[in-house]
Length: 123
Length: 109
Image 1 (spheres, chains in turn cyan, blue):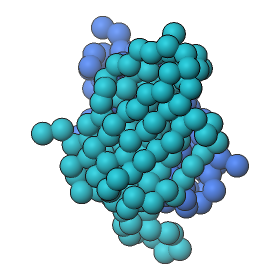
Image 2 (cartoon, rainbow over the protein chains, first blue to last red):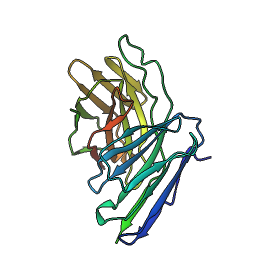
Image 3 (cartoon, helix red, strand yellow):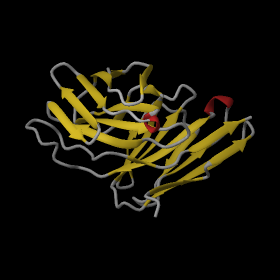
Image 4 (cartoon, each protein chain N blue to C red):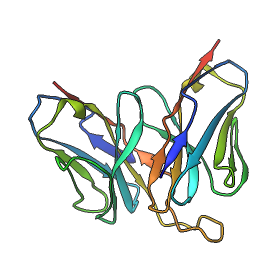
């Protein structure tokens, strides 16, 4: 039973098209994320949602719009695709808050569980 | 600002021990995570440190020094299947995981 599943696994599309990637987690986690991993394998946060509310929105073009219909789902819609959008997109989830165990810290999340990734190729 | 550094590549021999270092500067600190990522696959969680010291989990151990902004992942009795990228990630006060560039480890027979 897959914990974090995202579809499709592969997506090849032409420049200018609009596409969506879906993500679902069955772990009961409160927080979900979208990460982009480029050709140099650098994993960079794009968005983070906690209980359906956006808490992190990094410097991402507004052609990218996340949507969280409920806390188990976080979909990513991309408008007017460009060549530079080609990358692997990972969805992830984690549970929070938790006690980090030392005085003065803020309550953080548990480890993130990742989906299998969606390899997007824009031609 | 936020910055996480790791060596880009490392090579080691089957059966040996390898140490992968990570240095970080982030806005707040809620813990440091190590992930393993095989080519074409998703990252998977290996270890977590929030207090200074060593955490051991079988063949893998991870060390943290918060005052130095430094961590390492130690892999013992290397196996061919340990060839992968190893990602260091810090959780900051924004409850965001910031990942380092990853270290690609090649294990040779």
